[in-house]
Length: 445
Image 1 (cartoon, rainbow, N blue to C red):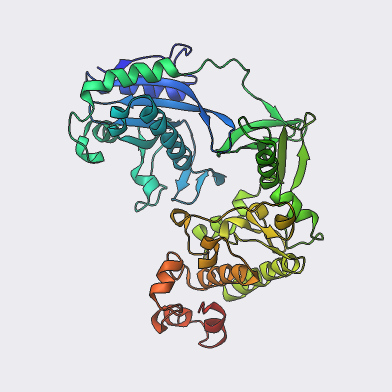
Image 2 (cartoon, one colour):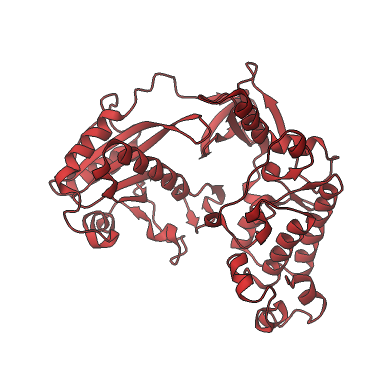
């Protein structure tokens, strides 16, 4: 039987779903396995802000550590590596959250003891509701392989060193030390759990990033209306006044871009506001995640008419931005929403415009490990022009027409000589497409 080590300020599981998970692991894992429930650690992000990250369950095994994010979701669950749905309502992919927490945990262990850097930390999601299953997941996806119900498959994964590529006793000599350290380092939550933000009731924490927390919120008197509120911390420790100003400018980048553009049905404009103490900055949108193009691409195919309409609508939005001139720099299906009458562009947080020079700041280059099919090479040299957004829109047009992207990233296109060969042209993959206009429109050379 495994050993449960409660953090010094914790009373154990915080809900029935976590209680089921802990009891299942305690009974089914063997001796020498340590379970730390409901831990919380502080993380100082690169910009000097402090986050408090909650860890549902940590298992320290003789060969590795398992960071478990538990969901007690009932109802129909579907998902792939891009998006999850619970009863047809979109949910953030919890694997992204748990992997971020894992990276923070790895840094904390390495800073405490260099020997502990060899400890492998595996990120997994558990579904503790007894009526839940994985039938709705894409079987070829990471989310299917890293998600478990409470059964033999979960125990087999945690107790099999070869499943994570480690020796059977890789960290056995200091496993208990790590468990004691993690339980002892867990923080005492002195503040009351947050229930509201900017006058809206918090329903769920959607995402935590290096410098923001994003909430799903509803008004108290109109719960059918849903909003997504992103809260940024403006005051960060250890920064000079100049660094603080740059940090604030970067957070307010989308706001500054929006202020320079007229209202248009093809551009989604959030509501922005400062807290009364001017220490926090908020971005508020209608909750439209189910209407993202990325979500729709995973659920349906588009007719040629629909695809052309979407591309033209986004082109209208980009035309307005470029005339100001503002370059979006992140045109992709995640930042396109299909509204009732048209498609609209959002996500101007990484956009570039002339004030970047006046205010002596930039959003910075994108690193290669972030590369996706929609980003041209110049973004990785911190360069930009209107052609950058046109390139991205071309890849989206291709994807709408044939059902997949033409390449993984700009380096793949470079290996193809900078243009698509005949066998990758849309009309070659989809014989229903005309061989002239569509091929030219989707041609990325």
